[in-house]
Image (tube, rainbow, N blue to C red; front, side):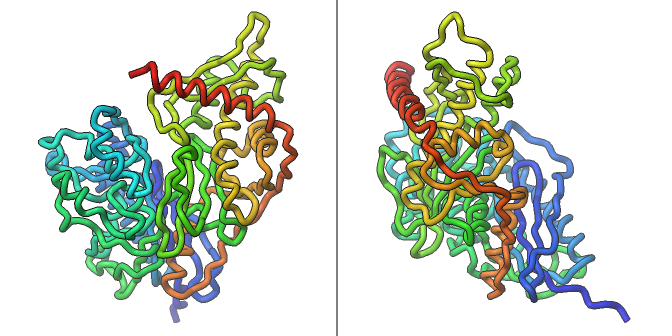
Amino acid sequence: MAMRRKQKIAGFDIGTSSLKVTLADSQTGKITDNLKYDYAGYRELAPGVMPVKVYEETVLTALSELLQTCELVGMALTTQMYSVCEVVDGEIVAWQWNSLWKRCPHKEPDFAHQLQKSGCRTDTIFGAYKVAATDSQKRTGFLPYGLKEHLIAFLTGELATDYTTASASGFFDIEKHDWNRPFVESLGLNIQELPKALPHNASVGTLRRDLLPGLREGILLVPGLGDGPSASWACRDVSNFCGNVGTSMAARVFTGEPDLCETHGLWNYAVDAATYLTGGISSNSCSVLNWAQRFGLDVDAPLADTNDVIFLPWLHGERMPYWSSDLRGSFLGLQIGDSPATLAAAVVKGVAFTFARMGRVLAKKANGPLVLAGGGTNIPALVGLIAGCMEEEIALLEDGGYLCSTGAVLSAGDGLGIKVDPQMRIGRTIRPDGSFIREYENWLSQAKELAQFYNEKIQ
């Protein structure tokens, strides 16, 4: 007699370079598997621009393999945030967060206030910015949604999304928890194509049975959260305050109300009727450390004395709090006697202080430690510097490689009434000691002055 396969729920994380899947037993709520699928036939049409069929095919490959080993009863999706879809030569492509887009400052006054309604800043990362900054006669191929919404429609036949992804599109109104239809219509987009916006754990529908041979009836799909929010959701039992230090870096906190302070420069995304996710993002993280290493600076070495040398790591412009592509990376205070070790230490401090700028603002809303993940947490000096600027304890996860897919399987469990254990294990904690606060405050003062200079002089 054949043994009955176990019933499981799945969280799919459709990331930049791969699909990650986390499975949980539907009876016990225990996570059983973490799986990874590379994108077959991976080809970008341009940096950050991908045909959606690459993602469709990879999702189907994963589903097909899962059907051989378990009985899937429900799933949730998390995807890269900030994407927008466009029809190009009859093919749907997704402009992702890392796609290149030229800023159009002369057009920004026309739509900046609309982006604010969605909880977004005036920045090219947001899909609505890309559409609004495009000449009207060239907008005809754009769709009022991104990759997540396309995949949900592909899987279920229903065009739907979650509140965080909708907020991050720039087309939403977080106060009304609904689409900003007048803005969408003013851009010439079809408001009939706006997805249904739902809480992350609400039912969208069931998977289409014609997707794959042998697909059982009634597999529930809930939308899940956006990728960053999903990573934070995975840590919900530890803290509402999370961050990641990778190629880019971000910090996020779940809160009962948005932070609309212009000086803080945060984004605010709706999660459900009573919850928001407030946070900041910087592109100047490990990518800056990698840049320094190419010039022979040993950023992994113990910190040398910086001798009052300050580094502002704005190699990619800067997002929070300045939201300006006009900013430039800069060394300040260089003298003839400064060594490569001095410069390396200044670079690491510049990256750490950039994160601390986000973390210190968000910490006021925290109910626990700062849960930190990402490749940058493997650099002791970087983590020590961040801890030296914070007042909250830092909790480093043992393994944060599947945070987004873990958050997604939690959403799926919520939708099915199954309590999933995220099994977030803290590898170690670091107590704050205030050892770098004075140096951080001096760095911050210099950063504000130089940001003002660049924004006024580079036009």
